[in-house]
View 1 (tube, rainbow, N blue to C red):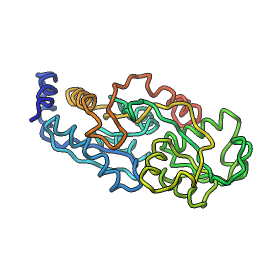
View 2: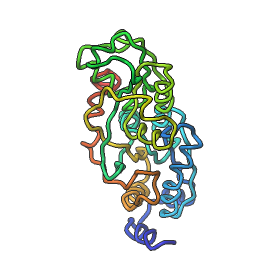
View 3: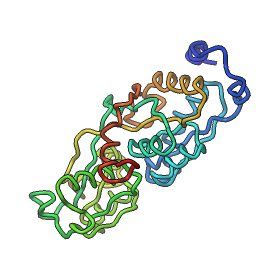
Length: 282
């Protein structure tokens, strides 16, 4: 056991509830959303982080890779996962529906925020967006995506625009598929997020000259590390401590660590969801 693992265990409460002691040898059930083009890519990129968390807690683990953004919220909310790395909107859905708790926010290149973007085929005559894009085809990501669905929908709503009638609209695609579709000329516009686009260009999946960014959101909070509502507090606190102690060497490229999440971290995402009628009490 590493010195860090010993410190985490010593820092945890010593008087564990009987139920927690009984579960101490059970696998930690982790989940992660479709951050990479394929589930296999996602597993290879993200499993080292979850393996480290499990090692620091001296527990076996299982890792589920969901195929859509809504799926990870369902898994956490239904108690099929103990801890999940999930997009901001997915976390807000899981919190609203099942009381999930964000224990940390990831840093990407040392920043806790990112941007939703809309990309376009480079030859399109779009000087003003969205005015010059009326009637063009657009592909949104699935409805569980923060940057690919929620945030751009909310932005259009604040300007009195219904994207379903303003554009030739479709949704449900993955972020990777959106980028490839624009680069290949299969669709005029698509939603994405800056981290994903940068990663796909760096990996050679698309070239920078095959598309251009025509819209960028205000800063959004990065992904959450969230736990189910009824996870025992000892495990929750140990997972938080392990995440906050994690450095870039145990994370996918460009992720550099974690900071503690607060109740205010994802408030803006929740407000957008309520404005769009996607949360109860909106």
